[in-house]
Length: 638
Image (cartoon, rainbow, N blue to C red; front, side, top):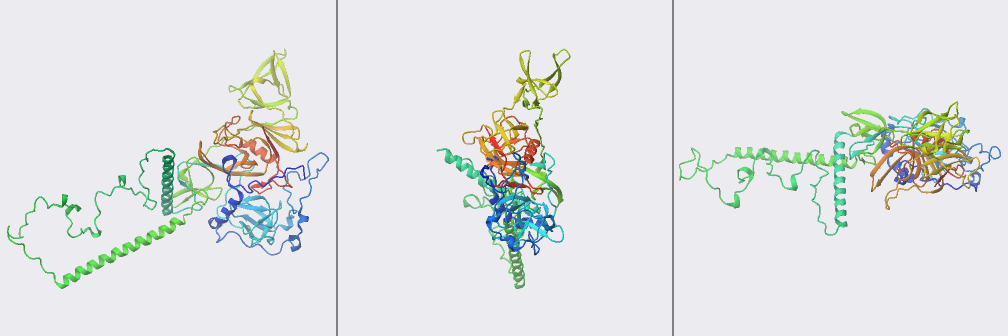
């Protein structure tokens, strides 16, 4: 075992993150999954996620084995000098259960359901299942630690999942899940369909909201945006001594009704609304304004006919009868009662809105998205007069705020056994010419080769004083039109039968080796040259793959590039902290530096390497972690 570098579990289960790009670690994801139990319960159509396992199962003496009996067996080659019989397998400390032992139906009900090496939440994590994954598992196995009251269940490949942490089990039938997300297309370069957010402040919901919740979410985002703008302005002012404060934007009141407009400049309205019923307060002049300077009006209106002769005193007011006074009092009391009822109704409405505002069904990790964020599309739903996209991670986004995201691909190629003298790619922008020898021995043009086309050569010759490389089928290509891979030496600690990867940052080339034999080559995009504060450079050195994910979401906030977020980046293979080899469907610049530090690959190349490197991902799992018994393939970056 000493020849293997001890590989950490990276960040355990990565569900979001990547490269220098900002990874959300396993423990954070596990906590988030627990917090989202209430959210995801609505997806399963049950009052809570998880169900009690059936009784029976593994005998107690098996569960309570001594620690020395759980040591990982040594790796022994099947034949001298060859790979072990279980090469690439996860090799958990306890043997996997047989088919006859797995009699219980199981479903991953959380976004991430961890697989532990032992029936103990404190044991190392071997990998994870994604929401919607189904499997047959063993009956309930008691928790040997603490925190999994409903018990563990063993999986076919080995390892244990906890029924209290998202594994839904049923001894009789397959558990129900409302609108299960699509399984990744593992047989295709692009495993999901993708959409791009077209407007800032787009909410991500864990269920479809009603119109009032949509309105409240808009208010919440505007309040957040206003607070951030004020914070940014204060930071700018503090950074520049003597700089005057920028003109303040109108206050955004988070509780203002949708569509309400504040008076320009924060001034009071031009007129004061009249009281209910249109009755003006006693003594108020017509028009609602006092005479200028408090003076008397410029003229006094003439008395109306019947009001008495000019110069004579007006007639005394008519005395109201007791019945009339009582009627007026009743009307005033009724008006006060109606006003009190209206106030009470408004207070109750505001109380309900406040409660609803505090319980908005927004995604707990990404409540609001910006234009350019990428999400994974599953099903399109029509509800409440609006269309919604459900994402592969169980969230909901208004369809009007999402556009289809185009995806691109690139691939290198496998290196034939009879063409390993040299290999590389056409690098002339105009393309290159392929020639063949005619009957007279002279070279004659055969066809055009495209820019970045992969070629492997069986020989090299000089023709007319110019160096040429020759394919196994007799095509001649000038060396000057090619970007060729440089030969690499197998690093220390890598066995003659082992798989490893060489990444040449200068040439932007990757070559996969089995021992000393190159078997695959492609172009990459490594970290670009950024700024001293954000260099974005891919780290050089020798590493081992620590975790692999069919897809892993990546996000970050770069000062030079702004915020970004991409759900389900395909075929991620992490080798050092947050740095990974992964598929990149959003650009076609392979062969040029472009990333934030990760090694970008065409999706077809990334998929080929994903299934070629170790450790292998067990069937039905979404991700796997390397460990002492299952080391990851080495990655050498120079």
